[in-house]
Length: 318
Length: 288
Image (cartoon, rainbow over all chains, first blue to last red; front, side, top):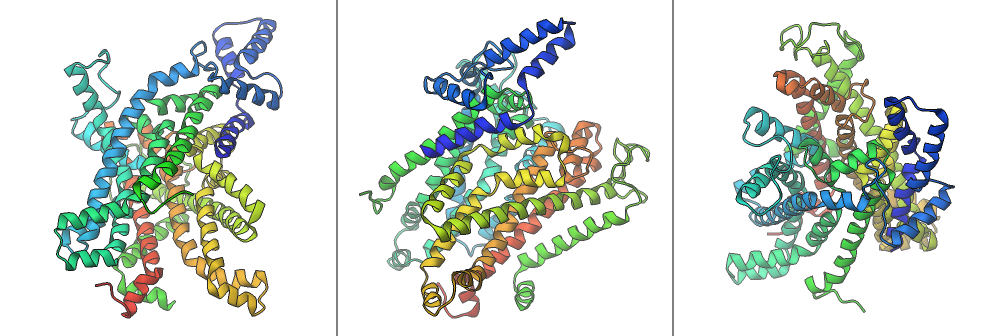
């Protein structure tokens, strides 16, 4: 709880310490179009400051912010003014959650399976080749992976569409055409996310397994010539704890969205919204999304603490 | 030094990584002999494909890509090094403080670190670099990156210290009359150094990746050539659509090679220092 509190406070203070001023940026946008009376501008500034909840000292703003937050009100978006932050998040969050949950889980499962096999058969040739390939992909920054995928599959071989979450004009529904279009648009971003995250999972799993392989109960199981499948399932079960932790934390982290993914592939998710909010100084929207993300991660950590005893019966809380 | 020779001889990964890093550093140093200045534009004919005169062709901005790349590599390396330097100094200091002093100091520092861990890092980085865009140079950029990358490492240093404190030799040292500072410097730091080295490289890779991310979004100082800004300008002039692959290709490839090189080094150093593989190498104890 304290962590959430401090985290939210940091997110509250940091943008307000920057020299950005959302009111001024709106004013300059308005006055650029029409010539206005300076006194009217002054009035406008006052009204906007009031509406945006930016009036008063930092402390006053801060107290007011908590009062609203606790009643579930994140305030209006400063740039898309009458729309509330909650509404904007509601529109774009499903895209992000859909994309990121699926690709995170795919990457996780694939990483676990491949990592287990590569750790168990560590002397086989294919396992060493796989290890080398992963080792070369793992340190590459995510953006570069996404860029290469776009280069290959959208420019050179235009198999996949370059942008968007689904074809324009299609209404979200359960029709065949919508779902295929959704899959087609989501494919490249999802693949890039899978490649970007699988390296770490694969390597940590392989390291865990190669440690386990040397442990007594596996040596015993081998001598007792238990079927391979059984041994592998023992291995997986025993390496699960840290991996579940990773999975939960990354699922908790998806609320801040995949800014880069959504930017590169022009995916209509929360990351793009957050990015434009940052560039336009939309404090409330930024805060809203960050709070979601902080709460997401903190909740994931809490849930983990609660389910650990289920996963590993050796852990008991007194 | 003997460890270095042994690594070169026994570990192919180290050999490859070392070779790559030396090449990259030579490339970076070549920037001092560049016939063009890094900020010179429109001095050469545009969009020329690679030739003897311009080994990697020229860009739509009339720059020689090979020499620009040398500057870019140098600057990216500098930013990465500075960032990792600041963040690890902070991380080590905080980790040591909360590990050794304990009590309330430890509680406060751990809570602070935990709060930084739950922060969405990338959005905050984007926000800060957007806000300070006008005076973003190497130092401020490195500070920004360090500001967001000290929390995890400091927690790891703390846990290392906590386990070192419980070791028997610590008690022995204390009973034989070593002062606290002596114990820390003479007994514990040598244990931490290998760990710090591997950690440095991973932080370095993170910093380089973030620099690229920010530059590609157009949020860093775009006039300084770094690998990220090179990619930014290539994208800006739509190098892919125009088919000027020699513009977008080299920075991407240079980056990939650099990160793989550093990563191989860190894996091999980490492996070398892992006590278990050490024992295996000496041949005293085998797992099979």
